[in-house]
Length: 169
Image (cartoon, rainbow, N blue to C red):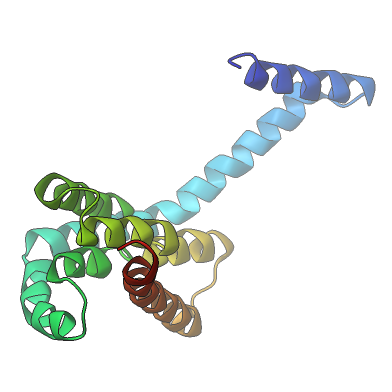
């Protein structure tokens, strides 16, 4: 299986040569466009990463968890999933670290472990996706997209709990 990627590259080069395309020149043009895209979204990504780090290090996630957990538990949501639900739209890496922590403390087959597993597969890193995709094409107004994305994340959290409760317990 390790030969598949080199084989694909060779096929592209051969197809380009058959069509009399300057393969290396086209490759360089594409690489330059890719670098320009990276440079155009870099400031936004740096800002997002800084905001995520500040949010986690400041204890804001912990403070929100303390406020939301009692309400969530009364609604039938385990309090342990609240930090993951809060951080997932902002940071995939941060939410994965919290997911692993739940696995280590409660086990992957626990009720909370199953819920965060379903959440990880059904939610999106909304802020990251908006940052990358919109900044790469220069869109500035994200209001409706942000609202729709966060509502989709909330729906995914609710249905993660319901799915696990109905089918996996």
